[in-house]
Image (cartoon, rainbow, N blue to C red; front, top):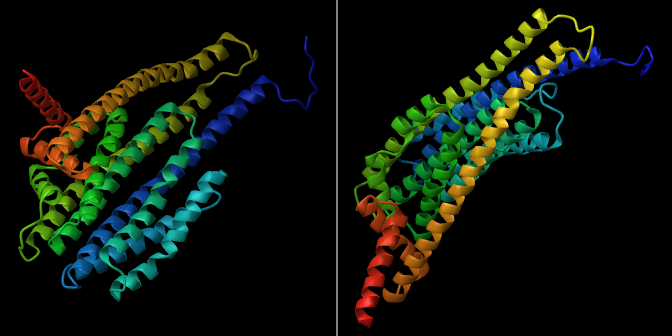
Length: 398
């Protein structure tokens, strides 16, 4: 028999302490949920200010002056609320998280200088867009660090889904800004076009990550309202494959309006994701309080009641880990498929480079244009091209 000093905590004390720690983490996460909500509001308004400032600069100060001022005022309002919630007492003592917060706060402190440079037109639209995007990136980088304070798989999944979604939404915002720049100027340079293509292509893995973890309701809402519509795809095709026709800025305003509508729809979905996260925390807190009120005292730390309670807590975790393993297997299979598709596309590019005297970038744009014209995936066009090439080679050798 093991004897312990009277001052040494026993199993019951440790069990109660574990419950207190768990409840403290949930209460802390509830506060962090409010922080994430304010952060998402701030990022959305920064995306609006970035877009309006972009068009204002490209038009030489003729367009979007009221929108630029209004969005800047809303950014300041959201920033004050966000900074108010950054109470060191409410932030977990994790160096990584604190460093991310410090970078975000420092970037916010540079915003007045950026606005002054924009107002004086001492900065071009491309540079201004890059600086706004860097600020937004610092803000979004706070969210992954919150994972280190969560040990509930369901909450981790919701937070990862939210972060993936917000990353995708930010790429949509950057797409809006870059497209507005090209359409306002009336031309897309090769570098600007490549940046735009990168933002379009980068959205897919972000939103796929969100969809793999989201509820069926949110997946349905995203597929119905969050995807780029036909009108956006038509303008994308112009931006990615040819130069826009002179129209006095009408295409730029249409592009900006359509992308803004999409961003507002994505913002509604983002709010639903945050609400679901906070509701899950509140429900867990309610369950914890109910268990504490109805829990019988444990005379025997190794009693069946205690073991049953622990098993009941562990079973969902085991099931969640099994689901995560299954999901990881699917992701690995998807990654393998993506690599195979990339090989097919690379082979098709080589065919175009060899027989059409194109460089690699021209071959890539050619494949993308054919895919957009036929409303097909690029890998499907690449496979068809390789089939035709093989038949042509066989005919020559016959």
